[in-house]
Image 1 (cartoon, rainbow, N blue to C red):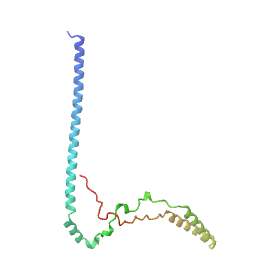
Image 2: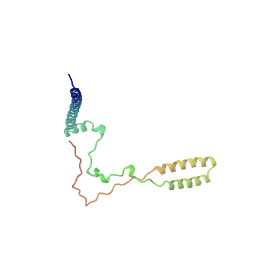
Image 3: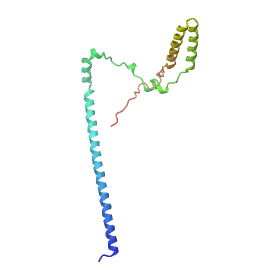
Image 4: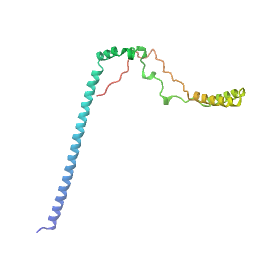
Length: 168
């Protein structure tokens, strides 16, 4: 008959077979996922190639010239002058980089204007002048200075043009 060691070996073989089956099943699922991802990547690459070809057709100079001539009266397009091109460092600051103006000066000027207008007016007109001056002071407090771009230096490399590149 069967000995205890035979039963233990049969149990170990059954457990090993079960573990082998689960590992094989997981590997097959991962292989299906890899194939699905490869198919998605191929579809995306094909889409990118198609869009590049479409862009090449849409941006042909002859086609653009025909469109400009056809819609010139409606669009009133003008050629870009060489002086209209600037470097990135010449652009104004971002809104987050603009310094905040001092609001206390605007409040002081609003109070003095309110007092001056209230002296020569009746009580009703003084109240309306106070409200108007306060609104004007609030409006001037929100105005921020316009940042100016740095002047283009003569010593810079004027022949060098910064360009971007399209990654493939």
